[in-house]
Length: 560
Image (cartoon, rainbow, N blue to C red; front, side, top):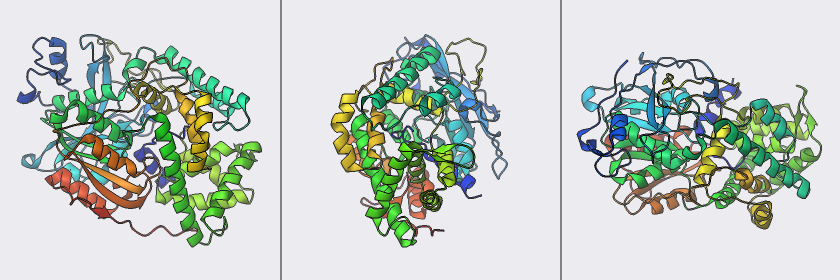
């Protein structure tokens, strides 16, 4: 279980229902004439960048998401009849060599529902991960953003290395599953288990290099931010209007650093702490998930559940359960097994939204009675499993396949592979077993339940063939327009403190924080009216909330 990942809010919330039941793009703006897509100097001597900025997108009705995007049916028209349109944008494979090979970036949009005179431009979304397909996610959550469509075209994309934007492919799904089943993701029996985990990560890294080595050096967040600016220009906007969630907040911060004068109205929700390196981020998540589980446990007590008489007892029950099933997995009625890693996966996924708490309560009570079916199903539905991907764009300019589609599909999305590739390209940290063992006491203090797995996840870049960019992202953006940051006090994956640190790192009068005293990952998709009103006020009318503004949550869900 890749516990350290920032799982896409959209991807997780879309599973709640499972549990409970063509027009050409505008030309570049006058302001961009003669400027490079990286914001540097006159572009008259950079004809390749000029050519890319002047491309026209061939918008067509969207097909069904490809297997590497996650599969499913073609997106249905919106209630007013608006059809989803898809296109592929060409961008340099290597932004340092804009005249070289190009890569196809898959885009999706829904045109604005309002009057043309009221239209502000395009609003670009990144739903997090890293590794989630924005082309697949946006239609699934379009109703949440319908009010924003009154003044914007809604646009999302598969970032480079993701889905149909030359999705990174490592081990094939069957080989990945077989290899992962042999390895304990949180070793506790000495050298053999930790050595096996290192060997697994090195095996995956070698497979990534073999299958996607040509694109691996170019899938980092800096490159994705430059792609964003190219999108802005091709879509005809003077400023980038942006909505980033989870990892999408890191992408937004990096964009603001690179192009501060190009920032329009931007909202970052579920904010990544940009001051932390990989190990510090994992430690912060350990504390965040521990806090979130304690909040669940307090609610569990209020529901008079059978897991324990108080929060401490329920935490101890979960710790003991993980250890017991780590040693002796529990057989399920489907012929599988529920082990300790899957217990943590089920709990972790369930903490991303309050709507999953009742199912988690049922699953934990059942497994203490010897029935692991519910918890196993939660782990399967909410856990981030699988590896693999597809070829998609082959990275060459004139390949005769500009539609961004996957040429060699597999039966799973490439989200896990893309997560690893983007994370390892961004981070220069390369930790060893000794590093993890030295820091383990801190992780255990932060969380006896989640700490070990998150500590060992720091080895995920072992053997990675590409050197990472930096210990943490640079997001300082003096002179940028205000950016609204929404921090959730109960957020497990991007703990609340990250919003304040992002605000400080962006710079004075740039980061503007709104607090949501809620549960789950992110705030806008919780449906909280206060949060939604604040986001709508800024994106639609340019009105920021008062400094120090706080949104209170709705009552917690009732249990069984």
